[in-house]
Image (tube, helix red, strand yellow):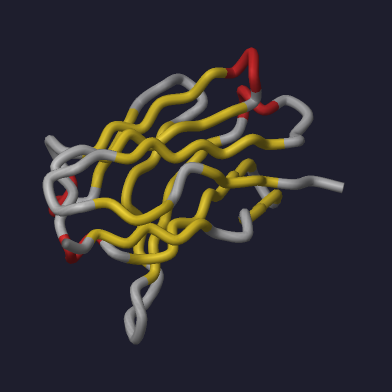
Length: 115
């Protein structure tokens, strides 16, 4: 059974940093496109950052220059480094893996940015 397990969320002050991790029990992990989504209360889930199997990255405009997505294929793990956090970054963050018709989600991890 495929599992994506996120960790690293928590409470942080504005301007602080957090690093999210997503460990995936996926065969051929390196072939999957990986992404981080977030969903704030009352809002739709949105794509924050993505990384292809070749390592190309893309970011939602509001996080460009503050967030960095990376992957370690040897450890079947994808990361999201979040710096200069703002209150509007508060949300549940979800890890996603996609390859052809295969589509998997993690359970989510809460990130709260507040003083």
